[in-house]
Image (tube, rainbow, N blue to C red; front, side):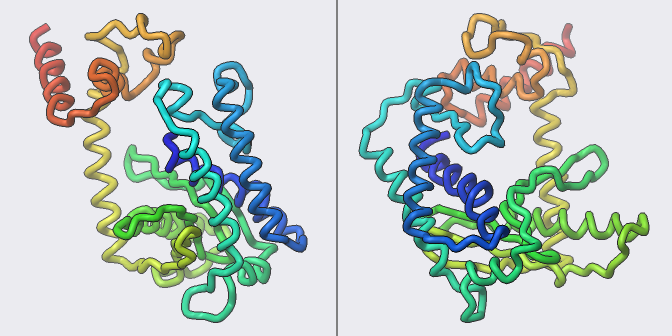
Length: 295
C-alpha cells in the first residue's frame, strides 16, 4: 500500500476491530482516547511492515497489525513527514466520527449505530453471488440493521465517485435476499428501494446516500460482464506460464507463478519496472496469443 491507501487501511481496521465491537458491547467511548489508540495501531502496522514480518509471520490480513507498505517492499524513497500526515488523517477521521449526522436527520451517525448495536456486522468479505462463472464478493465495511450498508472513506478528493462500488454492494444484498426467498429460507419481500447505501467520508465529516434502483442494478450487471471479459483476456484461458522466466525475480520464489491468474500482467509490470503502459500491455497479450496459435 502507498500512504493514501494505508490511512484508509488503518481507519477501516480500527473501526471494524475496535470501535464497532465497543459499540456492540455498549461501552462508553472517549473519542479523543480512541483517536490516539488508532494512531498507535498505525504505528504498530508501520513497524510490522518495516520489519517485513509479513514474509515470515503466520498473520493474515484479518489481523489488525498486518500491513505491507510499498516503501518497505519496493524500497521506495519517502519523507518522514509523510508518515506524520497519515497519522494526522487517522486521528481526524476518528475525531470526526461522532460529529457526523445521519442522512436528513438530526441524529448522529454514532447514536444511530448505538441504537442498532445488536445488528452491526463490520468487515463482511464472504457475502456475494455468482453470475454465470463470475463471482462477485465486495468488501462491505458495515451492515447495519436490515439492508442498510455503510462504506467508510478517508479521501480528501473533491471529485471521487464511489457510486458504482456502493451499487455493487446493493446488488449483492438484493441477489442474496432473492436467493433466500427462492429457497424458502426466511422468505421476505425485497425490493430495490429497501436497500440503503451510505458513503461516510470521515475526513470531510460528511455522509452521502447513494440511489439504488432497477436501472442502476442493470448498469452494474453490465459493468461486471464487461470487466469479466477483460479479466478473461488477462488470463488468456491458460494457467501455464510461458514466455518469461520469472524465477530470477526474488519476489516470486516458490510456486506462486504457476498458480497465478495474472501472470501476464505481472510479467508486464516487472519488465517495465512497475510502470503500466496499457497499449504495450495489450500488445504483449496479442503477440503472445499469436505466437501460441503459430506454435
